[in-house]
Image (cartoon, rainbow, N blue to C red; front, side, top):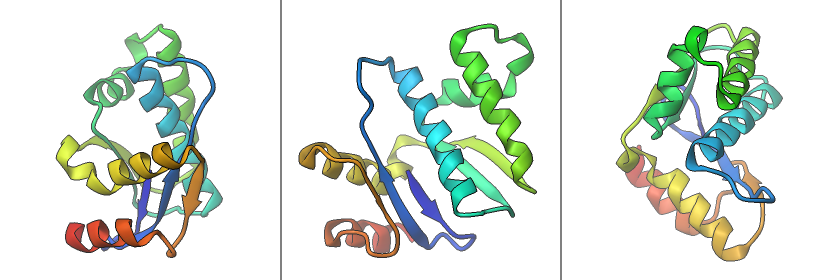
Amino acid sequence: MVVRDEEGFVLGGGGGFKEGGMSVEETECVAFEESIKVARRLQLKEQVLFETDHVGLVNRLNNLVNDVTTIGARIKDCAAAFEFFNSVNLIWAERSCNKVAHLLCKKMYSEAENSLSELDYPPEIHNAVICDV
Protein backbone atom coordinates (compact mmCIF):
# COMPACT_ATOMS: atom_id res chain seq x y z
CA MET A 1 0.00 0.00 0.00
CA VAL A 2 1.08 3.57 -0.59
CA VAL A 3 -0.06 6.47 1.62
CA ARG A 4 -0.17 9.87 -0.09
CA ASP A 5 -1.33 13.31 1.00
CA GLU A 6 -3.93 15.37 -0.89
CA GLU A 7 -1.26 16.65 -3.30
CA GLY A 8 -0.01 13.17 -4.17
CA PHE A 9 3.13 13.33 -2.02
CA VAL A 10 4.03 9.88 -0.67
CA LEU A 11 3.89 9.81 3.13
CA GLY A 12 4.85 6.16 3.37
CA GLY A 13 3.97 2.69 2.28
CA GLY A 14 4.44 -0.97 2.91
CA GLY A 15 2.90 -4.39 2.92
CA GLY A 16 3.39 -7.83 4.28
CA PHE A 17 2.87 -11.55 4.13
CA LYS A 18 -0.01 -13.70 5.34
CA GLU A 19 0.21 -17.41 6.08
CA GLY A 20 -1.61 -19.82 3.79
CA GLY A 21 -2.87 -19.64 0.24
CA MET A 22 -5.35 -17.01 -0.90
CA SER A 23 -7.17 -16.13 -4.08
CA VAL A 24 -6.33 -12.86 -5.80
CA GLU A 25 -9.67 -11.44 -4.67
CA GLU A 26 -9.05 -12.40 -1.05
CA THR A 27 -5.54 -10.94 -1.22
CA GLU A 28 -6.90 -7.63 -2.52
CA CYS A 29 -9.54 -7.65 0.23
CA VAL A 30 -6.86 -8.20 2.91
CA ALA A 31 -4.82 -5.33 1.44
CA PHE A 32 -7.94 -3.11 1.57
CA GLU A 33 -8.58 -4.09 5.21
CA GLU A 34 -4.98 -3.34 6.13
CA SER A 35 -5.11 0.00 4.29
CA ILE A 36 -8.13 1.04 6.34
CA LYS A 37 -6.27 0.10 9.54
CA VAL A 38 -3.25 2.19 8.49
CA ALA A 39 -5.44 5.19 7.60
CA ARG A 40 -7.11 4.97 11.01
CA ARG A 41 -3.76 4.57 12.80
CA LEU A 42 -2.49 7.68 10.99
CA GLN A 43 -5.72 9.44 12.05
CA LEU A 44 -6.57 10.42 8.49
CA LYS A 45 -10.07 11.89 8.35
CA GLU A 46 -10.49 14.18 5.36
CA GLN A 47 -10.77 13.02 1.75
CA VAL A 48 -9.44 9.50 2.23
CA LEU A 49 -9.18 7.75 -1.13
CA PHE A 50 -8.35 4.07 -1.44
CA GLU A 51 -7.22 2.83 -4.86
CA THR A 52 -7.10 -0.72 -6.17
CA ASP A 53 -6.36 -2.27 -9.53
CA HIS A 54 -8.88 -5.04 -8.75
CA VAL A 55 -12.15 -3.96 -10.34
CA GLY A 56 -14.01 -6.81 -8.62
CA LEU A 57 -13.30 -5.28 -5.22
CA VAL A 58 -14.73 -1.92 -6.30
CA ASN A 59 -17.79 -3.60 -7.83
CA ARG A 60 -18.42 -5.62 -4.68
CA LEU A 61 -18.21 -2.49 -2.51
CA ASN A 62 -20.67 -0.70 -4.79
CA ASN A 63 -23.13 -3.65 -4.74
CA LEU A 64 -23.00 -4.71 -1.09
CA VAL A 65 -26.74 -5.21 -0.77
CA ASN A 66 -26.70 -8.17 -3.15
CA ASP A 67 -23.42 -9.78 -2.04
CA VAL A 68 -23.86 -12.76 0.30
CA THR A 69 -20.38 -14.26 -0.16
CA THR A 70 -17.61 -14.53 2.43
CA ILE A 71 -15.62 -11.83 0.65
CA GLY A 72 -18.79 -9.72 0.54
CA ALA A 73 -19.11 -9.96 4.33
CA ARG A 74 -15.50 -8.79 4.74
CA ILE A 75 -16.09 -5.89 2.37
CA LYS A 76 -19.22 -4.94 4.34
CA ASP A 77 -16.98 -4.70 7.42
CA CYS A 78 -14.65 -2.43 5.44
CA ALA A 79 -17.58 -0.26 4.39
CA ALA A 80 -18.69 -0.03 8.03
CA ALA A 81 -15.18 1.22 8.92
CA PHE A 82 -15.72 4.12 6.49
CA GLU A 83 -17.71 5.85 9.26
CA PHE A 84 -14.39 6.83 10.86
CA PHE A 85 -13.60 9.10 7.90
CA ASN A 86 -15.32 12.36 6.94
CA SER A 87 -14.93 11.72 3.21
CA VAL A 88 -13.89 8.31 1.86
CA ASN A 89 -14.07 6.30 -1.34
CA LEU A 90 -12.60 3.23 -3.02
CA ILE A 91 -11.78 3.68 -6.69
CA TRP A 92 -10.34 1.53 -9.44
CA ALA A 93 -6.96 2.53 -10.88
CA GLU A 94 -5.19 0.96 -13.83
CA ARG A 95 -2.45 -1.45 -12.82
CA SER A 96 0.11 0.86 -14.45
CA CYS A 97 -0.87 3.56 -11.92
CA ASN A 98 0.30 1.41 -9.01
CA LYS A 99 4.02 1.35 -9.85
CA VAL A 100 5.18 2.45 -6.40
CA ALA A 101 2.97 -0.13 -4.66
CA HIS A 102 4.22 -2.89 -6.95
CA LEU A 103 7.85 -1.91 -6.35
CA LEU A 104 7.26 -2.03 -2.58
CA CYS A 105 5.73 -5.51 -2.92
CA LYS A 106 8.63 -6.78 -5.03
CA LYS A 107 11.12 -5.41 -2.49
CA MET A 108 9.34 -7.06 0.43
CA TYR A 109 9.02 -10.33 -1.48
CA SER A 110 12.73 -10.38 -2.33
CA GLU A 111 13.64 -9.62 1.30
CA ALA A 112 10.90 -11.90 2.69
CA GLU A 113 9.83 -9.41 5.34
CA ASN A 114 6.89 -7.23 6.32
CA SER A 115 7.49 -3.52 6.04
CA LEU A 116 5.82 -0.19 6.70
CA SER A 117 7.96 2.86 6.09
CA GLU A 118 7.16 6.51 6.47
CA LEU A 119 9.10 9.28 4.73
CA ASP A 120 12.30 7.23 4.90
CA TYR A 121 11.37 4.86 2.08
CA PRO A 122 14.24 3.03 0.35
CA PRO A 123 16.28 4.74 -2.42
CA GLU A 124 15.01 2.38 -5.13
CA ILE A 125 11.45 3.41 -4.27
CA HIS A 126 12.39 7.11 -4.10
CA ASN A 127 12.99 7.37 -7.86
CA ALA A 128 9.61 5.79 -8.65
CA VAL A 129 7.92 8.17 -6.20
CA ILE A 130 9.55 11.21 -7.85
CA CYS A 131 8.55 10.01 -11.33
CA ASP A 132 5.00 9.31 -10.14
CA VAL A 133 4.28 12.84 -8.84
